[in-house]
Length: 67
Image (cartoon, rainbow, N blue to C red; front, side, top):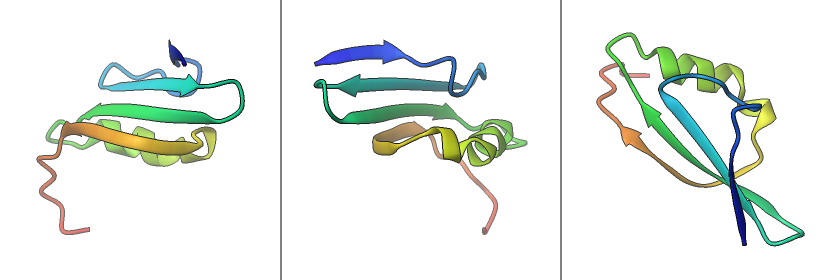
């Protein structure tokens, strides 16, 4: 397997996107830190078209919004 940090998909200080593939399928691991304004989540929401299958998404899920 090959792993790579993908700043070309989302370039934000609170989001890390790592892809891994075996020559055929590409999957993503996403690490998100959510601040009090949920800035990173808004950036992630606006860039979901750039990201394929997400296997694991981790981070600080201190989201206070009911939505």
